[in-house]
Image (spheres, rainbow, N blue to C red):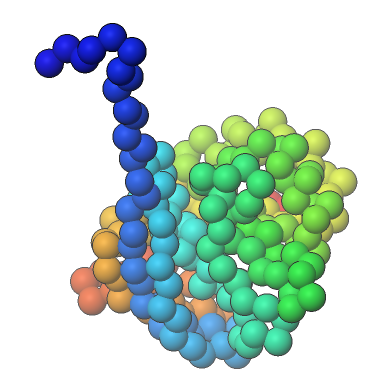
Length: 193
């Protein structure tokens, strides 16, 4: 029905979808054996693929203890001032700043100035094109590590996405396996910086 003059139609913001995951991590390379209950907010603009790469990044970087703070999911997709994941020390310093996807290189430069360690996971079939365009601009950042996931592997991870997930993550000799009760994926992130 028509609205009376001067009455505006309220815009409804689309909210993030909540996903819950139980991660059983057996990282033999780091001597880390733990179970983590995590909650992820998947922003409307985020794909299952991106969300699952964030979850993988958590599993690969979660510290073995909380003596230097916890690794937590931040609001990276919804807030330009925060990464996808980060770890603050107990005194407030940013120990780890973890990004997923193809962020603006200025964002990575700012992050390198704020954090002890910046890690970026790129994926998709066009990731190498993006990297070719920014790698010279980021070459001087000594605290930046960049890993590329093959597109087929990140898409296989996306197929495992569910609102409630029980995942086992095993890391041994640099090999990574992620599985649930129905399938498993072997992931080989390649270091490119």
